[in-house]
Image (cartoon, rainbow over all chains, first blue to last red; front, side, top):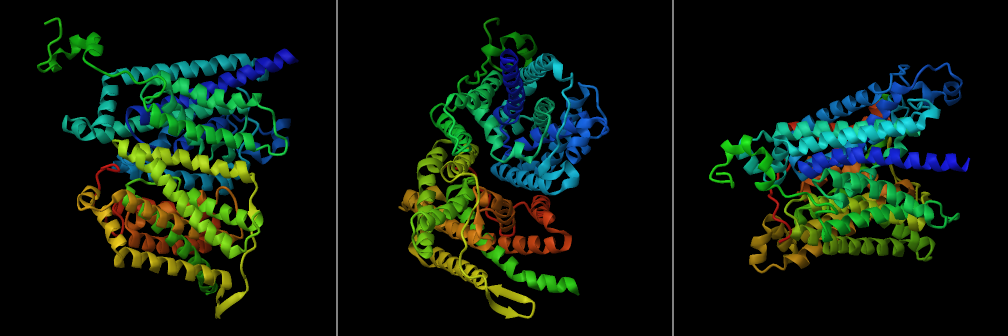
Length: 338
Length: 300
């Protein structure tokens, strides 16, 4: 049994790492690259988990369904075949993001918009907890089956790694494309970007939708493994874990975001397992973990704001491979080939 | 007609909410006005006020009013520390309002969980004051606790008003709110005045935290952060940075949320905040009392 437990422990770490990594990539797109501040990020993560879980729940006539009762009954009785669940979840996250983004409209750029996301999160959280017809209130949903059966956890681990790889490729392609330069221009100098004809609002809201869909995908990747979801899984400070990951890893650097997610989301959580347990105060260690996460974020912002893996500065030389396409735009800047 | 009775009976409760919310929102707005930073750790100031009072009276065996006064001063000092050692340095260095805001978000998580680490996760109860009826007019009844809360809030508001409008310090503070660098050029010591403003704001937050504790009798580590749900819409409604607007916004939000819970059920109470926010965002983004649009100038 020992070997089985160790391998299950490793599977757990890998799946949590993949899920947090995808979420950190999404936050990096909106905060690190485009400069939009969204304190309701974990709300989108959570809508993905709820939707991903509810579409995966199947018939209510099985023994497990009857023993769980209402926590199971929230399933949509769909048993969607696997890759569809996370995709539906991502779409749900994107739709919610479009709604929030359209409400915040031009405030998407400033600190007022960020404060409004706090209020939106708190209202959504209270409603999810108190309105039982929506997501079964504080009891949440449970009994979500593993997509490939309980015997095939290794296969699911590989699929989760695949989702992370896919997200990473998407985020990297976006960051390197002309659209990525547009995002960075908006982050650095919104007025100048606007003067150059970059549609600020459209770009911001597109990135907002796309990155929050990634958050929803990450929630869906996690929920079929942990098999249940309730408001306790997504409290307000939870967003700090993702911010901390992006800030410690390196704002604007996708690889940094993933590394940060592994450090803050996985390594910091596991490190305390090696501390002796304190039976009289079981919540002391988790509380101190939060304190460490918060302090680490502040310390990094002060002493190393660029993070562990700083974003590479874009200069003309780094655009060299694109030079053929860029030639018409190089006003007065002559490369070595001319 | 039955509903009318309920509205009148609920008036006292709504008035207490309005008083507490008014204090908290004015304090939140004051911090934004002098520092240009939206302080997400503000809710925790209310929480630690409740815990200071609890620790003072339960472990320190102090009389409750001494513990309460001590808690208010301690929160004022905590607020100054937050500004002087965290918010102000980050503001001086940052090129946008985002970094100081994220820092206050991190500090909020730190404070909330420090409280859990020290006092444990369970809520505590502190039976305070006198819950017998003090004033009764038909359906309208007010307990001594509610009466004391409202009187305390009104006194705090009047004192704040006198400080702002009648003292040289208030004048200096308003000058900083209008234009920080100009105020500095006129010889106003902006750092000290800002810290004093944060002290006043912290004391108001402390009073609000204690009033919340008195009105419910129990407190936990989420006491203040949950209250942000009402503070934020009230601050937006009043016009961010406007202290008198904050008081008006608080009264509107308090009565709207309390009365809506009679009409639609208490679980929809929180929706009022959201509806108000949406209305403000679509109709009047600057709030009731519009403040001039501010550009980020940092803490210079």
